[in-house]
Amino acid sequence: MDNKTIIVSNRLPLQLHLSDGQLKMTPSVGGLATGMESVHKDEEGLWIGWSGLVEEDLDQDTHKEIDQLVAKENCATVSLTQDDVNNFYYGLSNRTLWPLFHYFMEYTEFEIQYWESYKAVNQKFANVVLQHIEDGDQIWVHDYQLLLLPALIRQSKPNVSIGFFLHIPFPSYEIFRCFPWREELLHGVLGADLIGFHTYDYERHFLSSIKRILRLDVNFNEIDYHERIVKVDSFPMGIDYNKFHDAAKSHRKLCSEERSELQQKLDEHFESTKDTKLILSIDRLDYTKGIPNRIRAFEYFLNKYPEFKEKVRLIMLSVPSRSDVPQYQLLKKETDELVGRINGEFSTVNWTPIWYFYRSLPFDNLIDLYSSADIALITPIRDGMNLVAKEYVATRTRKDGVLILSEMAGASKEMNEAILINPNNFEQIADSIKSAIEMPLEQQISRNHLLQKRLKRYSVEKWAQEFMKSLNATKDIEKVIALK
Ligand code: GDG
Image (cartoon, helix red, strand yellow):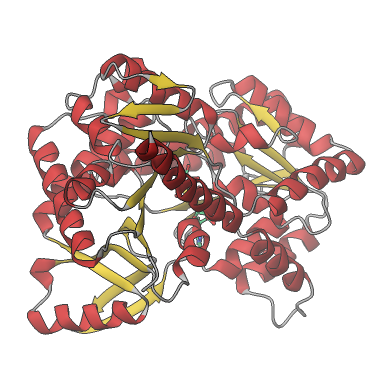
């Protein structure tokens, strides 16, 4: 039998819901799920992850039903208890590693029970992987929830090839060194043959921690580790360019009856206020995304350039996220208050400066928003990559529109033609909004032309292929070492 590829991530590329004892399955819409499609579509391939349901809510029959349902999609589940979810997922993953790796030291909690649970849950993932794995298989592990998994797999199966990709930033040594179990975490990920990051900077920070904490020899981007070579590289994640571009194109052609309710509302808005520019932001409601900063910068813009009152509107889609974590609840409150205060202060009979949606929208509505916006204002304080910036550009079928993007997002490294800003500099953001509104059409087109060309070439499928190609190449390095 041919060697197979096993993908492992915290969540599966499908969502399971249990309502009134009935099990429902829907595909995930996220970038990871679409990106990995090309790797996963292989008949022999397998995707392992948590179903999103906790053991306490499932009886034996439902367990079986879940296994059968997901098996049809070439998936297998890791079963988690409520306690695992509290300590591993909401605990070490989202109250420790997430804030720490995004430089939010003040939000970072170092709790021993979180760490114990993180180790135990990584072991649960390893146990499921080990049930399915055979010598010669390749495994691609994803993200910060599973940093210990590569070493746990390698201990039992030294002859498989393991890749690891981190979707969030890897912080500088000075930040990473604060993590109490830093050596164990690094040894965990070094179980992989290939470790990938979105940008060269994250790669550099990782290698610096490897050298300074573990005192290992690093030769350019290769780590000499227990008679193995571990390769480290950057693979900036792309998007499914054609999916976004084509959706926006066919969307434009829809007749008025076929247009979604949101699009009709947007159409009405444009009919009544022809000169009003629409500025869009889309993100999960997360403190890393710089949402309050963005709203304050918009307020600053309205005060600094009052001639744009009634001529511009900020439309913000904030997708609910991790609402069990206190900082997310506080952020929700702060955002509601800021939007309320600014709308209260600036609104006129004909104009509300901010339209704010706190929900997730279907894909078609997302396309409505992307294609209606003159400007995208994306201002994270830290962001591993930021796919929204890329998706906005991909939907510009006429090549008009301006992207204002934080230089703290990994995406900024490949999107030099955007207006790059420091998310903490309100004055710069305000001036950028003005420049974006006034940017001549030819300049918008020439910038988007270059951006689109790059996004089309380095799509998410290409990203996955490049990673797998590089993982396969590590097998050749091993052969050379064995010959020596
Ligand atoms: C992490 C890292 C890195 C958003 N709202 C809706 C919706 N979305 C989709 C977007 C986009 C995705 O969710 C968000 O991706 P981002 O990259 O912007 O952000 P994170 O969720 O924080 O992702 C990030 C990423 O991993 C990949 O490595 O870029 O830095 O933090 O695809 O389109 N989709 C639908 N409805 C919505 O309301 N259907």
